[in-house]
Length: 289
Length: 292
Image 1 (cartoon, rainbow over the protein chains, first blue to last red):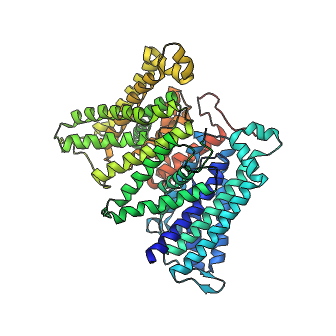
Image 2 (spheres, helix red, strand yellow):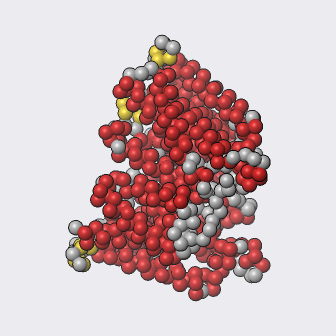
Image 3 (cartoon, each protein chain N blue to C red):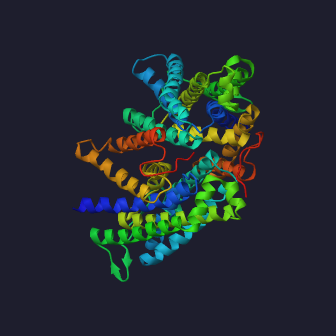
């Protein structure tokens, strides 16, 4: 039972990550490989604030959101100048620099040792100690994020984003400032990823840089592509499938030593297969044409 | 101190140039970011190790065989993955994603077969560093410099002077138009993937001989090459040289000040500066930028 609850919590965290990346990549067409950096800044800020300042969860969350906003603003800067595959490399660059900062800025982030002893979250004076309690908190925050993404996507804001994806010049001709929209959507996506990071840090209670590497970014992007970019339910479905299906490896007797590699081979193979045969993903309509 | 620093920068620059040539050739012709080139680089290193340890071949023979096998690997990648994508008129971004997937698969297969630890190739004879103007250079480091210069000139000559080179440039310009002129884009790209991947493999082999290998080595090597290609300007050979040397010198002089662990971050810092202020690179042509 504990195992099922654990899976549900992890799935919810990935739903937040993939749905928020979908706003950036699927709706706006900014194929970002920096999402794990936003996830990481949320997790690290929460962890450091909770460990050193001993503030309640809500305050940790608030500080992480502000940090993620700042990082989102910085990462969106190249998107104002370049697009297409150059932009992928630029976001990749941010991801690599962020990872190196986590592992080398030892005094502040703890370096490769990470941050440990992150306290359990206290919400409204009640400390969440059990898995089921944490699941409740996670589901609640996931619900808010998915609802917000859906509202944004359906609103005129979302239509402008899709306009930018389809034809920048046309959208500009309609009098929309596409730079402003790009910065806004990156900041919104970053903030939601930071929520996921805050949840992850306080759930696992120990974080190190390897959870926020480029592989994590690729995995989140793979979830979005496989689920279906440009829809809200597609990435959510993708997150459910890509988190739970590899767990089946555990049940068919694959040794634990090679399971992480097999899992990544599965992700890579799926990403390749979907790119060739179904680039719009399971539920999607948009295929990065 | 200074001569050694300059020598190290030149070596680093040559490695970056070496990684950049293969990537630049494929990017310039097929027009998508071939991430899986990173897996080819790693494969070159591990195939040399395999040849030397399992079949106890002499190191030079193992190295040449590994380079040839990397060329074949590139051909296989094109036939199995990128040709179907081209026939479906996939966009560069979709090809990039497929290439990313391919990279993850191959990298994990390598790390499953060889383990994640660092491996080194024992070259046998004790290598004596030669002294050159006050800097000490290992024979393999001189080989790296010589190979990267030779390959760079070779590829430049191939693209400028031969029929297949002309076909490459034609396909890069317009695949449909080149087909109407009797140039088969599929066949041309097959050759490009074979040569480009063999070049990547050569980079992997030389780096492995110099500093050893890990299954993750390819990505950081490739990314430095990508940065050099972009900083120099896509499609410009002098650009690749300038980009590679700029990166090599920046890295080593910055390492002197900041420490070695920031090398990659510095390379990407240079890249981001270029992308924001001069996206077409030093010597490149105008490229598609955003409006507004």
